[in-house]
Length: 525
Image (tube, rainbow, N blue to C red; front, side, top):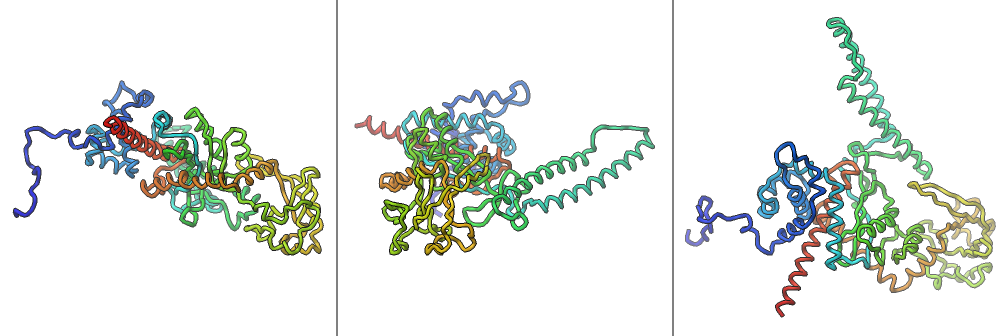
């Protein structure tokens, strides 16, 4: 037995001086600076939500918020697990000052302080900027998919919800008949006793029917929108998740489809701080670029110098909007190099020589001649095809998507029949001739594409992945947030904001710790 090390302190050993919570946390433990930052925040707006004249004294919001933020940064997302950590892990015990709140208290607290949490989010960013840890030079915006708290198979379609409403109507009628019979019997026994309110069981059925009818209206609107997009709702109907109707069935990053939300983050490139975060329930994350950068300017008082985003964001409104705001934009807008495109010729009314036809760019989507093969003449408002034929203006088309109206001019060639390039240019189903289109943002896109072909712009854009994708890797792989725990868009936004605030607070604590170490080392020289 003498071989084994003895216990430094036996379980029943009495000590002359009791160990304090502060003794078991080393001076350089990160939780100390974490708590120091929280102590320096003004909690007045949080405190105002409590009623100090009734009930037992509550735990201070600084303690509960600290437990949540510290726990989230360490991958603790469940209120029950956080309750366990608060009572058993010494760093959580130290941060919570010995308080061990139950999971109900923690769960309710997380949902009650949305506006106050936004204030804390802004405060952390401003402190980081004042300390030089955050710089608005390069910022990158991107979105990802996170699953909703809903089974991928539990969804409503128009047919399913119609059947559910029929079944609910039968149940409502049966309950109503039973209630009337009971009322008749009671009237015979006790006299007439009328009431204006539905019995609880009928009121519940009524509220359920109203909720289902609203979902049915949403599904009909979605099916009509899909029909306009050329999708047959009979074969591919719109779906709304049953348990989280705010989410939408979207493609998963891992493949397949499931109820999802689309979190969007704008990240700065110097310290990796998340300077704006939001969650949407659709795939059109490119519409969030301009609003996100406007919120960044409101939060930090400055606008970024450069904005980076992937190719989905390289839309005409984004290119034009950032140019108006004086923000340099870098994105991926593939376009053939004019120097390598024989369709870009001095006289577009002359045909491209046959020996250069194989060099004409091909669209990867249609496998036909790319739109870059058609040259626009602004003076005559006409396109010219590779054979030099004029393509005059035919009509203006428009559509409304997500509340925004888009319009574009259509130009059509009437010389496709007998053209030697027709097999490479026009699909067999096209009987009216090849078309080309142009909208009001075409000049901006052309200038932007020319800029992105230059080496300095490509090198700047190459930084996008490091800046934009790193936060999502941290949140998903390290913190384990691959599926939201809460339901409903407002609650999901709050869950995402708690997580992003925890990340920023941890970055700030680490950055200030590094600065202190550097200052101490400098002072010793």
